[in-house]
Amino acid sequence: MNATLGTMICALGGLAGAVFALPFRGIKGWKYESYWFVYALAGLIVFPMVLALATCPDLFGVIGRADGKTLALCVGFGALWGLGGLTWGLMIRYLGIGLGLAIGCGLCSATGTLIPPIVTGHAGDLVANKAAVMTLASVIVSLVGIVLVGLAGKLKEGELDEEAKKKAVAEFDFKKGMVVALFSGIASAGMNFGLQSGGALQSAAAAAGAGAKWIGMPVLVVVLWGGFAVNAAWCLWQNTKNKSFGDYLPTRHSPFYILNFTFASLAGIVWACQFACQKIGEPAMGSMAYISFAVVMGSCVLFSSLLGIVLGEWKGTGAKTKAALAAGLLVLAASIGIAVVAKSL
Image (cartoon, rainbow, N blue to C red; front, side, top):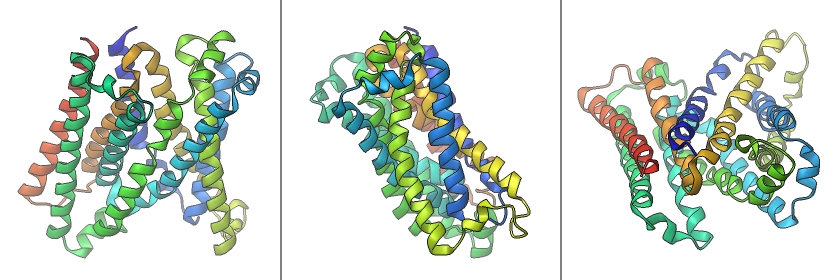
C-alpha cells in the first residue's frame, strides 16, 4: 500500500476529467449527438477494452465467470451513469467548463462517495476511526467549496450582460445549467456505484494473473457497457430525429470529417482515463479505497475551475465574484489535502 501514490494517481484522473471536453471545441459542422456518439464509442468501448486486454489475461473468461448479480449491478449502475453522462455535455454548454464541472463533480462526488457504504450496510465505516472521520470531513469540506463556486456562478450571472456571458460561454444559462447539473451530478454517481460493485470481477482478474493495479480494468469495461448502451441509444435516436447521420460520412457538408472524428475520439479517450486512474490507484488505498472517487471528482473540480479562469470564463466579473471563486478553489484544495492526510493515519 502507498496511499499517497494512490491519491496522486486519482488526482491525475481528475485532471483528465477536467480537460476531456477541450477537443470538442475543434469540432465543426456536426450535431451534438454525432460527436457525442463518436466520443462514447472511443471512450466507453474501444479504449477501455484495449486497456483491459493489454493488462488482464483471459479478459473475456474473467467476465464470463462472474456471477449474474455482479454483472447486472455493474451494467445497471453504468446505465444510470449513462443517463447523467448524456446531460454532462449540456451542463458544460450552459455553465461553461469551470462552473459546470465544479457543480456537477461536487454533487457526483458527495453522492457517489457517501451512498455506497450506507446502502451496503457499512455506514459505520464512515466514522469507524480517526482516518475515516477525516475522510468524511474532506467530502463535507469539498461540498462547502462547491457551494462557494456555485455562489460565484450566480454572482457572475448578475454582473455580466448577455453579450459578455455569451462571449465567455456561448450558450450560458445559469438556471437551465443548474437544473441539468443537479440531475447530471447525482445520476453520474452511478459510475462509482458500479465500480464498487465489481469485487467478484476483481478477484477473478487477480486469479487470472492480472497485476494488483490492473485488477479493476474488467470492472471498468463492464460498467461502461451499460453507459454506452444508454448514450448510443440516445445519440442514434437524435441522429434519426434530426437527420444527422450524414455527419458520419465524408460529404461536402462535413469538410472537417477526419478532424471531427479525431477530436471526438480524443475527448472520449481522455475522459476514460479519469476512471482508469481511479481503478489503478484504488489498490494502494486499502480500506479507504471508497474515497478514491471523491479524490477524482474533487481534483476535477479544482482543475476545471482553474481551466475556466484560463479560458476567460470569469473575465469581467467583479471583486465579490472573484473572491467567492478564489475561496471555493482554496476550500476544494484543502479538501484534497485533508483526504491525503486521512490516508496517512
